[in-house]
Length: 304
Ligand code: F0G
Image 1 (cartoon, rainbow, N blue to C red):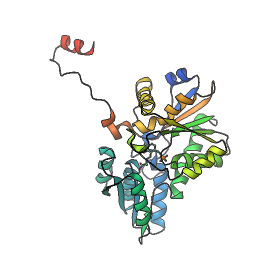
Image 2: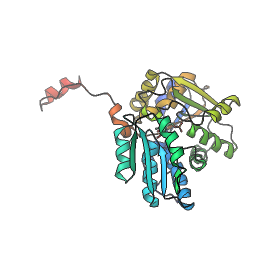
Image 3: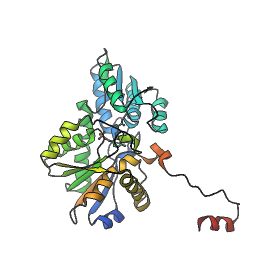
Image 4: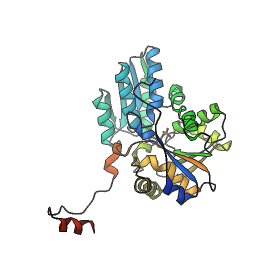
């Protein structure tokens, strides 16, 4: 039973990226969750359990996807959602998603880190609950990706590559790996230009889960690759143009990390695509070709 249809997302093969990387590359389409991002698995748990504990308001800080997800589950569970977004830094469609389902979207004069700090304070109010990934229920929900993947593949993958923003998803998937008793390694891609990257979903200066990420690195379970803007952009376009998978730029950070660190020959690899391309359609470069006359000749000339 699901709440809004979260989970059970498609796992697809990526034949051209497999040939490029000499590995068996798969794409896990978390972008096909109900609100278009991986957040829904954890949010179904977090909002559901908050309501069981008597919360009437859920609060989160967000670059957009957490906001859209929290807002949708709050609507479904009949409670209020208050989402704080950094001013001018979130994709329009994500704020529209949150507003459409009735959330209070408050833009803050500040960064994501400022918004998270405010949320932690706001969550002290009576009946308020924080549903950012520092809430352990979020991690419980997101950890369900791992057994689902193992079932879809029929075996444990060698490597799971994913974006590293605040580190909640990496922590959740590490937890899932531990619970499943498998030896799968993690590869996280982070933007070098954290606070200003064009991949707006991961515009996070100070990762909330940094300590856990360091522990995972020290124990050899996770490797982090720091990516340039071009590496993220190239991976984003490659996923779209080589495989037909249109994700938002941040979601390609796992693939970008994989391209840099090169998997072991023949390894079974899963790239987690975290958010849908329609979330941030404005990131797609404009086509600067002019409008043409309605004739075949003009059209052929335009596409030559
Ligand atoms: N990919 C997408 C599409 C995201 O929206 C996020 C985080 C991440 C990757 C990074 O995941 O933080 O768990 O390491 N988005 C948050 C938000 C910050 O507010 O929607 P992480």
